[in-house]
Image (tube, rainbow, N blue to C red; front, top):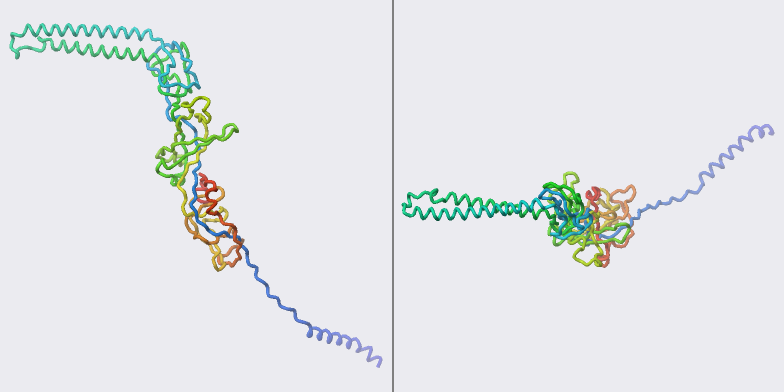
Length: 407
């Protein structure tokens, strides 16, 4: 018996443990199945509201005189005197005397021309008298037999021609005397001076340079795409110039839009607008009232009022990718929509077509976005309230290639 117990007891204990394990496994409690809740993306959206947006086209240019001329001499000679006005930086009026040339020889030529004319006139009077005498002496001869030479008609015509020649020579001598006095051709600013007392000048030699101060002209480059937004009527296009020299307060001037150069620059592919500023140096005002003088050579920026964009939508540029936006429909599903970009600036894009009033546009692009995804929406404040429209700054157009492509 003891042998049986010692031999089979371990086997019985093993079978007992196996039976208990099977019983526990069969009677274990089943775990509860939990249904996984689907995570729905949340998008921040804005409601579309169409408005009319005014904007400016930005450009830049250098202030130049509308009229400028070289001061040249029409006779040769020695510079006798130079007027104090003939100096760089001096303002002159039309007709102001700038310099004198030595005119002794020209006065001598003038006296000689007067004497020649007097001599020619005397010879003409003598020839007229001879013609009268010849006509009386031939009065008994038939008219058909009278010759022009006998009546001294050719001789009289020759003397008349000599008088006209002498008169022309006298007029030339008088002009040469006047040309020894160098005067300003128009109101202007002396910018160059190349002579001094004692200098010898020849006909056509440049004595200096003068800039007309009645009108300043600025060439403003714009892209052809930006130019399409400018009103063709110059009267409807206002231009404001501004400059901030030497960290001083910003100065502004109103300019008049004249037109364009009617060509596209072959190198820059720009269209140049022409604007004028009347009396840039304010010379028509007293000295104490000249506050905003526009000096020639000043670099200015220009704001050109363009035609407004009607029924447009303003979106932040990051909301648009490859000319598409993400919309959320009434059923809560997303969809891609292609839009037409009219203009862009540094922060915003202005959509002219592709969106309807009241539609919801996502402010951000969802990661791994699939069209038709169901999302939750959080409505942001409107892009622009109608009451705030007048307070919005004008849209500034940038002339970069990126902006023109609507990127």
